[in-house]
Image 1 (cartoon, rainbow, N blue to C red):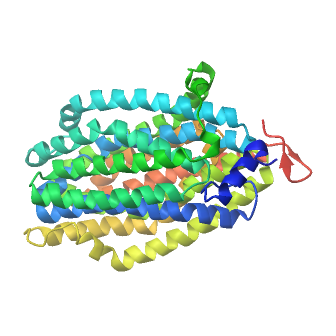
Image 2 (cartoon, rainbow, N blue to C red):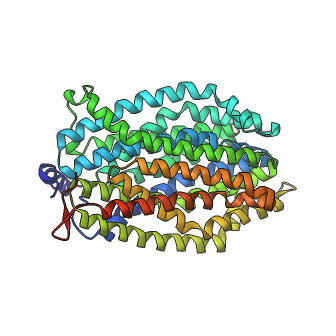
Image 3 (cartoon, helix red, strand yellow):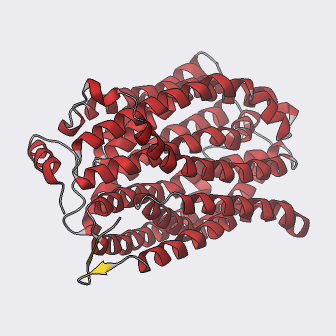
Length: 471
């Protein structure tokens, strides 16, 4: 089954330069790779301006400021990750509507997703800045970095509505198979962010508050650009009726989005516990963790992008009722994941230490010790990277099939993995044991989603050896 009526409109628009992509036809490997590539570049652009924040703060302000950024990682991710995955959950329904060729449902799903994002994003932006100080105290944040951490995360919390809006429009574009528009938006945002970093942090001497403000403004610009491009897709020619509240659609969106959001609340809960243990080893150890965690995005960016491509591919083909293409797509996604994971691992083992040096000012007396600890942590994460890539592929496949409950369970297992390491390994291996928290969390979660996917697919009723009537 193809895109029905919408397929003709999309095909016609495609001739005029549209970036939408029909994932229900063609070679799965080429489709997933061509869709993932601009997303990878876009994610690298996003990591570029996050890394730029850290480099400018670390080199221009010092190790304490770098540690202040690191002390906020998990409590900011407590908001960021659920927001990102909530919008991904909303996009699952949009993607399936596209595969079905139901243009009216596409518009309604987009409208209800937008309304939910405004409500949820506004609530978070208003409430969480008042909770920042309490959470930093609960994390036992060292006093010498407390004020900087509090200022940074308060600004980031206040900008949540903007961040959620950007993630929603990006998710909508990806649902249509458009990975190029988010890439262009991110390139523009990265350039603006770097310029504002230099102006606000180095020029106006706003410190890490300037870095936070630069990030939020950059996200706003990316959102406005992507929103403008969504308006050019014929299937998103919104009508007044589309904005009328529909309880059934809202419930379906929340049913898809909330388990993903809650799974990442669980993941972050484990991370917050881990951060509290890390903080107990002092600001230098926090700085070492921060330097490596700022490269985490480079390690994971390709995995996230392949995951997005997999979710879109699976979602459209699930909507088109084609199991055979789903199975082929998973094999293609895993092959791509293996290639990227191995390449990144080799790169980090060869040049990771030089990348870490960007964040650590050589003028600090403890710079060499911080660098050595950071590189140990980076090495452990790099050699176990394939586990993370498998996790993204299979979790995204389940999301594309509309199953967000198993990813939620996997998120809980990820939390269990981090807490287990934080509780037991330091007593055996000292602070070095904490470096195994991330790989252990990935392993717990990856085993869950991989086994669950294969069990679910094996139970689907196949007809004629290829196609299936998916319900």
